Length: 377
Image (cartoon, rainbow, N blue to C red; front, top):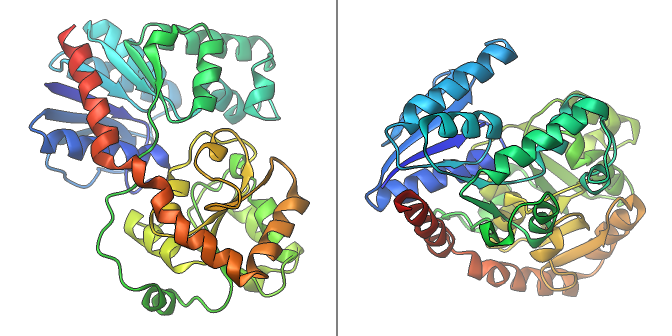
């Protein structure tokens, strides 16, 4: 099978698709398939065992989109199937022009994400389903529906997102849930060794991801401010970093919060293993890769019950859940967690086994089966 993988971001970028797309490419290439990638990047991506073609993000937006669609079209012509994890408009336009089927992996509502980036709407993804964003928001929803209705198949990492997709008029027999897999874990040092290497002393929370409005990290900072002696280490970068650093100073925790900047995936996994817990304060979510990564290395997750988070984090089993948007409850969860050694040990002991069903071989094996079927249809 000849597969073209399209992703809007690629290492060293931070974010779920920048982890997922390379993992899929390596898996398929390792299974003997002919794999090629199309992405956007600031500079040439690092060499891989397969071809990675890219469009520069320094180009003006319209030019970048046109070149992206043209590149997808030209590479799709030599492929049997296109698998896209982003750049959905360019992916669908290029695949349709090349007359090749495409499979979509959603991570969110693309119309909502586009509307948020343009400042058209506020609120969360559930509110957006009822409308909003004016004429451009309406057009973005129509474009989303066009792109997905012409896809051969659509994968969602959570039942929550699948329910949204069905509400957009996509046939149920072409949409299914495929969770994000646990990472292929390298041999990691002992936790105490990692804590020493990372300079972690005392009660420590960890976060990894893009520093954007979606993650609502001001709530995590407020929760740390409400828990004496608790530290927070943040791995990642994004447009909200400066504002978050100011907020940390405003609430008096600048000396307890460390901003590491963007980190390689291995370092992120090491950070999760070393931390006492991972924290997720997002306003809206689907099924975050970082939640699975943290649990896979035995680290509980303290999270807001947004989107599909509750499908992997079970309150009192492998983490603590609080109502979405309830910052006070998140602060109380942090205090409760660090105030109860028995609770910490119980959650930690159940963390890794709670995601055992998300083995890469099973998840990517199912995806491979679908791509083969679509390619031969």
